[in-house]
Length: 62
Image 1 (cartoon, rainbow, N blue to C red):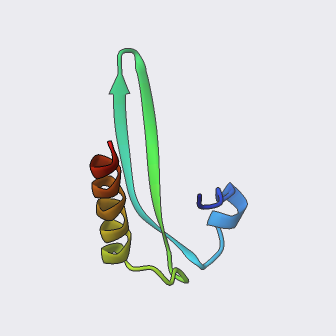
Image 2 (image 1 turned 45 degrees about the vertical axis):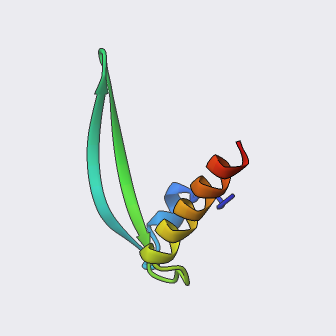
């Protein structure tokens, strides 16, 4: 599992705000901010491939 990033860490130049999205569930609104780690060694393609592989392995073992 990846470590959680604190608000103070997100202020560092290493992180870039990627998007802000609002989700509404009933009377509650959640604001989700997505950050991009500029020092990350894993590309988006790597992440998606890893997630797909995990899901396929899980489906095959069930």
